[in-house]
Length: 95
Figure 1 (cartoon, one colour):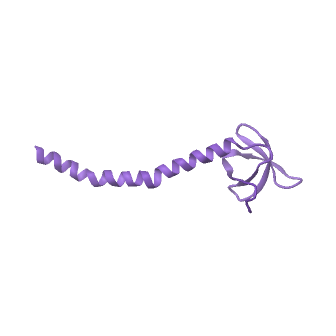
Figure 2 (tube, helix red, strand yellow):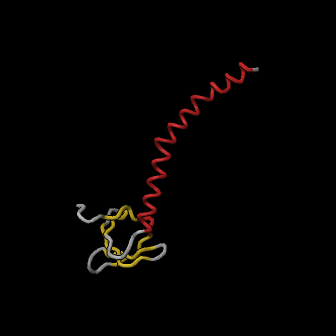
Figure 3 (cartoon, one colour):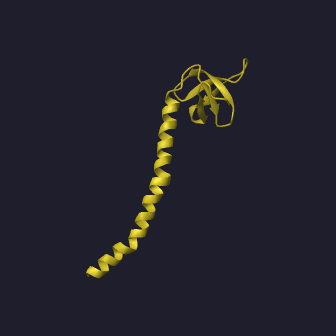
C-alpha cells in the first residue's frame, strides 16, 4: 500500500510543479496588471489626458459613474465607457 501511495504522489508532482510555474508566470502578473488598471480608472479626473483602446487621444471633460465625457478636439465631446480607457498619459510622456 505504501508503494502505491508514493506512486500516486510521484505521478502528480510534475503536474503540480507545472501549475505553480503557470501561476507565477501568467496568472499572478495578469492579476497585478488588472488591479493597477482598475486603480487608474478610478483615479481619472477632469483634465486628464487619456488614450482609448481605439488609439484616440482625448481630454476628460466630466467623469460619471460608468462613463466619462471626453473631448477629442475643440468641437467634439463624446461619452466613453470607462472600460475603453487604455491608459492615462502622464505629463512629459510623448504620444
